[in-house]
Length: 488
Image (cartoon, rainbow, N blue to C red; front, side, top):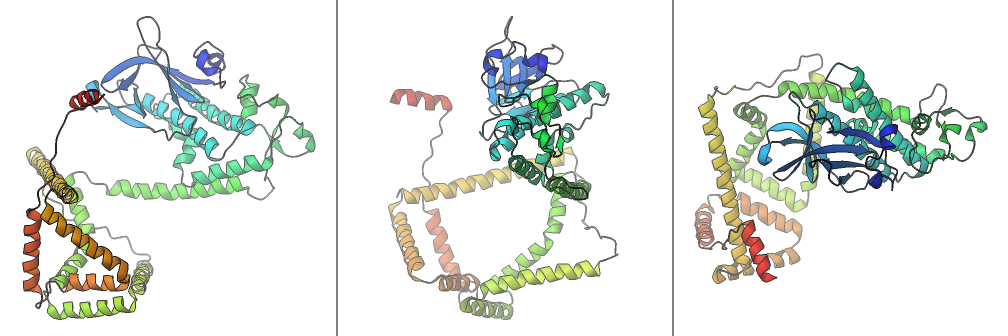
């Protein structure tokens, strides 16, 4: 890192902030780096510093002007894995999306290079998010950057000495790990509070005060000959105060880390159960979902039977009881009582099932489908989705026609209805509006109102079908650009 940072590589653009080069890739022909912008692809050299990511496109005999992707400013950057392929296709899982560009790391087997670069780029991105979130400045900012840089150097060292290609990069990178661990944000918050509370003063000889001290990350990299930032002044002559260190007790940082470890163990156990119940095939997953939603579906069927008055006595009792609850204003208490009953059911179930083996959900496996049947099922699903989208567009276009008065008679009726609803909302209390809506919904298909309801629903459908849809004009991007030029 020292030799690369002192070289002439990107010296013109790095000098303003004293950026240190942490990694360079794309200089070996057997391990190229490709940048995808749209459907075009450019080979080049990728450089990571402690503030930004640079890509230099390769020309005939030299490199082009470097493109800078800033990682230090609070710009809501997105860095994630991405699929790439020729002519913009999504085939190979070997790239990193750093908006607005896609950087690909081609290799014959696996995506280890991509995973490594994704981890180190995120480490620099997360350390700057940590700095910006807690407004860390001065020597403490340089120390945070040193922690991230030392983590990246550890990963590089382990890559050099390890023969295994399955290195867990995130576990060696502090800010990457805190982003993934449960309670990692509390660890970072504790670190920030410790940094601000101890009030570092590197200009004074604080070692003479007799406290307990440790070598900081900034002191470590400085002793190795690399200086971070411009605020440090002979950091090797001073130590970093540990702070909140007492014999036989745990510091706030140790408590946060211990709690995060315990929560991580629970997450790992829970994730193992999640991975164990994952099923392949859309038909199998639909069968599992149907079985899980069976109680909800049964409740829905029961409510529909009440609405359609299949059993008049039950529907009448339900309507009377619900009307009394709404009229007295007890709806909130009813919902609260429902939640309490669910909680009591969970507690009773827990005590009753202690010591018993967990009974798995039994699902009737669907009959196996061959390739042709699977393709037909996918085609039917796509056709159904297309039909739903078309119906949704028709509804929106009809509402647009009503708002623009393309059909004046229907628009007048719709406007009068809106005015009537506005008067009701303004004058009638919400309790009575809710009561009227409930009675209208649950007595619509009662024996006394069924004939009139069918007649009004038929008139409503006829009115809706008589409304024309607003026109739609499809134009290409080229036509849009030509129209824009004509207006100019």
